[in-house]
Length: 544
Image 1 (cartoon, rainbow, N blue to C red):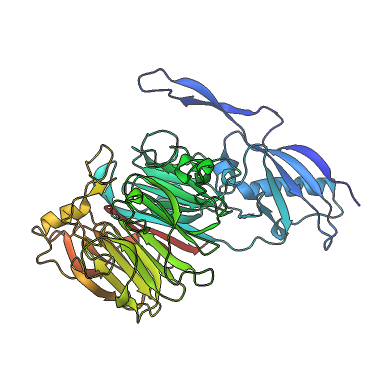
Image 2 (tube, rainbow, N blue to C red; image 1 turned 45 degrees about the vertical axis):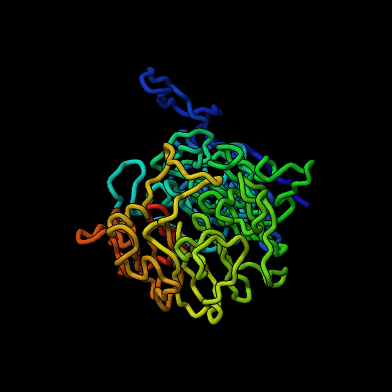
């Protein structure tokens, strides 16, 4: 068996310095700038050989150029692969490798396309693998946002988030004033307001552009979920990470290792040992479904949104994770859809049954009596329709049935009931979002009188047929039709419902065509819609 050849390869020059040319860094406002040297990216590129082509194993340590063009440039992986192939062929001229017959992969086996951002897939002294065969095709992604801008003030017109153009986003979610994404490489990024540490940077400094959440490189996050002012993420093992308001830290931290999951010495196991499959967050509470077929909830429970019953000890203060009991929920008949509203929760089982509980001040959980429901209630108006997807707004719920009909309950024009947290009337704190539903209520003339049934007061309202997906936020909603078209309704003072401000009215009574202009590629496929606060986000994918 041939031994593996190993060598150092200087891609840029013969210097072995770890540092690039100096760059200027401003330490703090008002201080004199000082020079800071950036460290160069060095990594190992390994080929394990291929019996079919009789090519031999080989390993090279590559030093990338000083200017960072390989790390973040459009052709970084291609140039690195070319450097490796050139070196390999110089050492093994009788059994050469071909550029178009090999591709790169990171240490977890994720293919790295020739135009990917190299620094996302390998760290300093990390490893990339050269694999035989052409790289599998990968779809590019884009994120389009519009509506309320918590940092600059004027409404945002629909436009792609340019900083994510080559990041390959696999998951996105929005809080009331921030957005978070998970990338194919396993990293997470966030931007927006950060008054409660919801960006995961360990501080409370806001950012208008995506910044990387501070996780270890060996943690691979694959899904993000945002609460009002906190962020949750699932890794590739189904374990939960959290940061921000009501969480243990502003740093991304494994949830089961914090006080928020409970103390084992007190018998509080929480969700430790469970593999999470579905995750949802509301204003101040969290729900998750597990591989074992169980459903857990935790957080605040002032409107009984945790679904545990009316026991007083479970009603006050922040609660640790506890299992939720639902009739018919088994390891076979699992939860297939789940979402949290402001202070209510809903889930659908595999057999199509829809259950909801918590606050019903606006009829948002589909019950006739306008009172809190402390345990999961069967939404009987959906008995003839198998629910497959759920979106909960602050005072509303929207479900998509298997027959592609979308149904709506509740209100997009706020609530007459006072907001509470921890059983006390909620007092607005610095860093919190305005009440968009309250704004809509005022501009609608006060109360829900005169509002269409698509905005408030509907026991069950059919919003459309041939609907692929739906999302509702505090005061607006968006529907995706089977032909790829989008329609929005609700509060539109910032253009969040239909993509532009309507000078005639800030309230869009019924779903209307959503105009994204040139922001959306006609060939793009919608992967997810997020309607939260006063803004809307659209994750799309396209060939290339």
